[in-house]
Image (cartoon, rainbow, N blue to C red; front, side, top):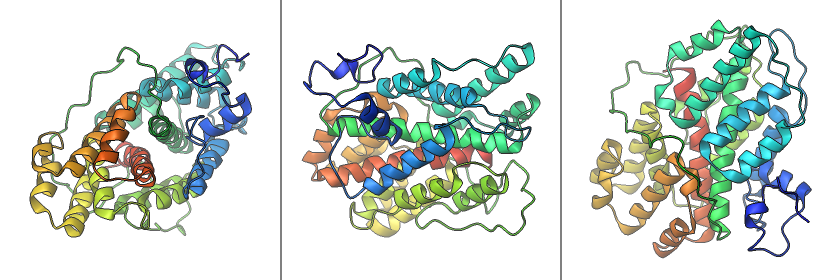
Length: 370
């Protein structure tokens, strides 16, 4: 009999032979819904997601003054982000791992520290547009080191990505996630402002290793290369595998037509308040599609732009809005709409991967600099 706290309990009535707990763990760590077993051209991408999960959350880290986040801290962060996403299988997955661990926070100072970390994780998971330089100062005030801060940002980004991948692959499997009362109100679209400087600027000081240089990721905003360099300088964990995930996520070869991909990235960046990314993807969408009116309209407001877009663009915008804001509400109905607009299952999976990748990378950009 399946355990009561298994992530698949809510689906067992529909499927006679659910995967084992071992399979559940592996699939959820990779960002795959456990019933999504199809082998795809993107297996390497999912494996890399599993690899960075192992690096960040898979075992007890060696704790030091500069790297002070214990496994309890890390899984608490992951559970907080999963709960904000309301993707039930992922929340159950992290709750199950956290349950047997001893809580090391038995002083007022350590409890305040964990509370501040949790507040930061909740903020970035729900509404990264509210992140400011003062947000990082609050983390420093509870004695988080710079390596701790960049690793915290990586963990939040990973779980945000996992939640979008799991919600997307669940819908591709024909499953709707369990509906729950909404925890947070929907995001309000932040006013579009002009960048105050030519390049993305970090809020953290650069690390001691001056030999490192940013390595551009094709298709991604230029600031992402600086973010990854910054994380590397501060000995942030999982940066090499994250770079590979971003490179894979921003480059799909011919799996999805590039204008459609840029449209999805544009909607995601616009919702998450990443203005440089919004401008970057709007320019690329215009260059590839030659549709200036649509590019300008989506950049101004993706929702009101729906009326000026084709059926396929409408399906992509609606899917992007839902998966970016409320992944728990992404459903087979969105898949049906995308299919009816002419997208294949492989193209839809590529769209899901693009949106999940953007959800991680854009949170790094808005939370670690300006």
